[in-house]
Image: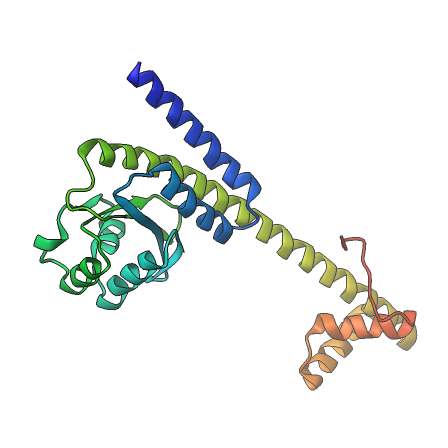
Length: 247
């Protein structure tokens, strides 16, 4: 029965993580919701707060947290260049600090954590794709605040969270690629319209018309697309150039 209950709970967590991907508009919002959901899902009287660390281009930053205290503890590690969450992410292993009062590997972090009332911590890597790396950090007010069962549950949770986060990143990348493609097509269309207008006015070839646009762009230090838009606007007497790609 206990096994069935755990499977049901895990299924509900997966469903909610998928909902987070669907309802959030970007990865940053997804991370914020994930940190809050993690804090609620892994709720325990001893778990004070949690955060998510993201490393891009070798620079770590706390992208989401349930409490400001988590951000301060994370930043202590970033400043020192080392700590449990950074070790977890870099080595892709779970880093459990059962008793911060007896931990000597990261003195700056340990001192800050004890002052914040933290007795133990648990950092779990989140598996992403590409160059970005991330980790989930849990802070407990008690020493030995994470049992073996807690650690196993959090590892399972982080596995599902990693999948949801990878999906959110892919969706974001596709949306960004679509936006860039539409912008490029709109720009190309505007330039083609301006080129055609110059060819008609000057009775010149397409190559010559494009050269005129480029010279104007370089001389005025204005983007080619903007020069083209001004040409089309002056001919149509409409300051807003529209293409069929406009939403």
